[in-house]
Structure formats: structure tokens, C-alpha cells
Length: 225
Ligand SMILES: [Zn+2]
Image (tube, rainbow, N blue to C red; front, side, top):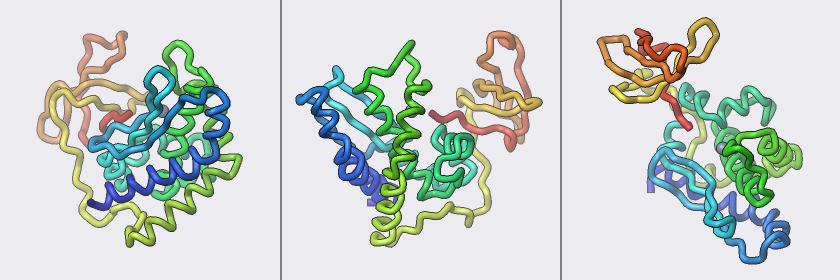
């Protein structure tokens, strides 16, 4: 088991013992047949899903964890942005906080699904953020943070960003989905061509459908969900 898989297992245990432990009585009050498990995935994908609102599962991708060890990438994840923009954990984007918040985020989806608070296929709605904020305000997020810190320390894993190796630039390839800023406006699109230190990017936006932008690689980030 590598470092990220180990951290992933700690996150799974934290989800089941702390969050599920504190919530299951309420969940069973809604429906006794509901089951839950949390497991480690291999890729980037990290999600909460349900089968017919009965079997719930939260998956933490080990590549997601690996990418969060990189500070530049950490800021690009929805969870990283939530800490910075919504001020969870006092707006501190440190690795233990980010991993703990990731657990809170996925579990907030479980509560959201049980409550049926998904409208127009939009999961990151105001109801979701009400739940997520409640997880933080209740102190459970801090309990998680402490658990993850202690377990990582016991496993000899340092939860700090990897700043050591020369910042290798993202290796972009045609077809990658990316984003960049132009005049304080976030533009998302697809890489059409890689040329030396620049990329040709076609924005998803309809108003710009025919345009292709040429942007320096260092101004571009991979789009992650
Ligand atoms: Zn989400």
C-alpha cells in the first residue's frame, strides 16, 4: 500500500466511524434498509453515490489524494476552493484540512441524497452547502481533522504539500479539459493543440464557439471535478 492508498484507508475509516457513526440512527429513522460503505478507488474520481437511495457508497480516488499533495492542484479542486472561498477551517488550505474537508464534502452528499435535496440535477446547490456548513459548525469536521492527523502520524505519513521537486509543469495533451483566467473571467475549454510552451484551447462557451485561444501553459490548469 502506498502513501496515498494508506491515507485513503484512513479517510474511509474516518467516514465510517465518525460521520456514519454519528448519522446512522437518523438515516435508519428514514429507512431501515439503507446500507453504507466507504472505499478506496484507483483513479481521480471521488464521489458519493446511491443505488435506488438504499445502498450508499463513498469512493475516494487514490490519484485524487496524490494530486492534493500538490499545492497548485489542491487549489483547483472544488474542495480546495470551498475552503478558500467559504472559509471552512478558517480558510486554511493545509493538507490535513483539505483531506478532512473532502470527507465532509462527500458525506454532505449522502445526507443531501437521504433528504432528497437534489433539484434540477444540481448537487452543489444551497441545500448542499447548508448541510456542509452544519458539519463544520457542529465540530464534527474538527473531530475528523484530529483523527486524520493522529492516524497519519501513527502511520509515519507526513501530511504536508510536496514542494521538494522542481515544479514540473503539467503535461498537457490534446483533448484535456482545462481552465484559465482572462481579465478575471474564468474560461473553460478543451486543448486542441500543444505547441512548445503554449496551448491552443477551444472554450466550451457558446459565445466563443468559433474562437480558439493560444495561452501559455503556465497560465492553464487541468479541469478537475
Ligand atoms: Zn460534490
